[in-house]
Amino acid sequence: MATRKSTPPTSAADFLPARRTLPALKSAAAECRGCPLYLTATQTVFGEGSASARVMFVGEQPGDSEDRQGRPFVGPAGKLFDRALSEAGVAREDAYVTNAVKHFKFEQRGKARLHKKPGAGEIGACMPWLRAEIELIKPEILVLLGATAAQALFGAQFRITQQRGKPLSSELAGLVIATAHPSSVLRAPDAEARESAFRELVADLKLVAKALKKRAR
Image (cartoon, rainbow, N blue to C red):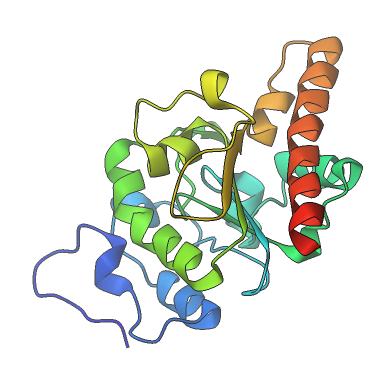
């Protein structure tokens, strides 16, 4: 059972279970009150995949579809992500997918709930869950999707434009690389730009596929 403190919690650390398994972490995360985002989100959206996954993908936060379904990467960006994985030769069922922040942060506009970027305090408060996932899974390859995920682990100075697709030195995994978040492909201004952005994402994921094959020998 997770330890509760008498003072108001300020991070997910107050809710981590003593026994660390993926089911235990997911169950404990469902009760997380480590930051105010739980007040408006439908539910916690924890990571999904095998504890023995060789590659782990980390995004920013769940979107509207993920918040309603309780699963990561199932909305429009998730479907594009699946297509990119397929073209690159990476099987999603062999991967673990999660987000740096486990609750959906949004701005209400009429009936629509528009994505709102999580702040540094919210990212920091949620970090114990991500750290626990990484420590438990011990992925061979860790892929950071987008600036928020990369900055959560490497600091605010990290720039996707400068480090994209390059091996990053870290104790987190044998190979750590950063690439664009699939949602950024959807935000491209026109069809041509979206196709170009998609091809760049696939190219980065092909590096992951190549590394997986190389490490399997």
